[in-house]
Length: 91
Image (cartoon, rainbow, N blue to C red; front, side, top):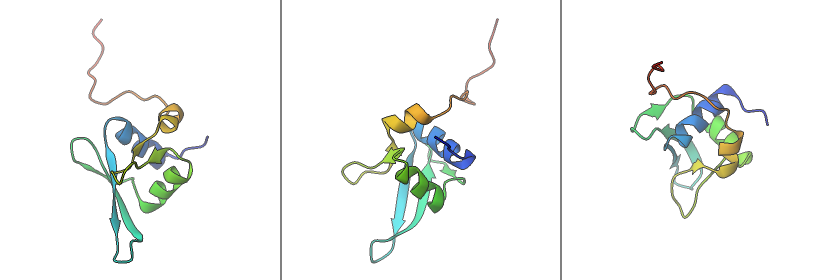
């Protein structure tokens, strides 16, 4: 499955414990999507278009009204990437 770079960054943040919180208007329509890392930082790559694309591909889901999180299918499609918090290898 083809996943763009902003989608990859969003999935990596979600895989590390992040979540997507939606902002809705009075009628209940989604106005904005904000991806928060587990530390509470906002990810600028997560736009409403990225959110809709990930949801359409079923890589993220919400259960019981909770914030959106990565699914098992999303984890399977995630390309492996080193976590930037891991220090250099010591030989």
